[in-house]
Length: 173
Image 1 (cartoon, rainbow, N blue to C red):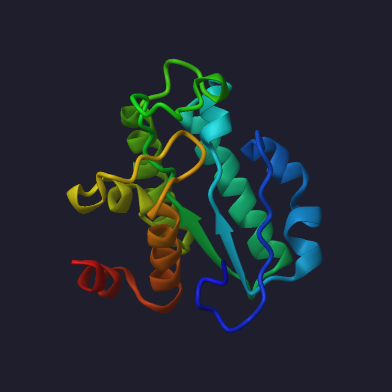
Image 2 (cartoon, helix red, strand yellow):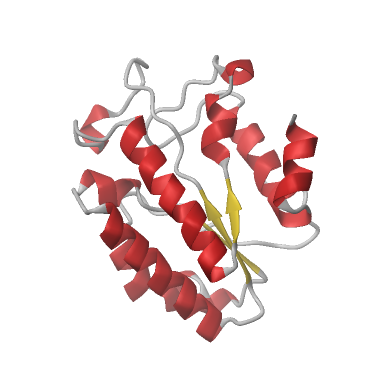
């Protein structure tokens, strides 16, 4: 994926990465690359590990503050967590606890959106995009978006990079 951007980027993804582990590993995962843009999409493993939403938000706040301190020119984006479809035959039940549901994910996403406003970083709402009727055939499991979902998310990230929230909504509706 190049997200349509005209520069290189690093996609640092690690299965079972938690927000607290990312705090401890920001140098290796972010600072060493001196990125112009940092996209954060983390928290599902925290939910799996029964971390409270307050703890996850507190860790996100620390991550954002640390990135701003160490890479003050980097643009920071928070990507919402994606919906899960427990009825999907490909659902990776072993990767999540039974008490994670879309209600809990929506609650976390709402808090992440508020945090993004507080910290003055961009919030990318991929959850709503994947939940819309026009993409019901896209069945994300807990960790991987299937079929055309990845392209939709790539477009949403691209829009967030170049447009403000109102312009994004105008483009997508």
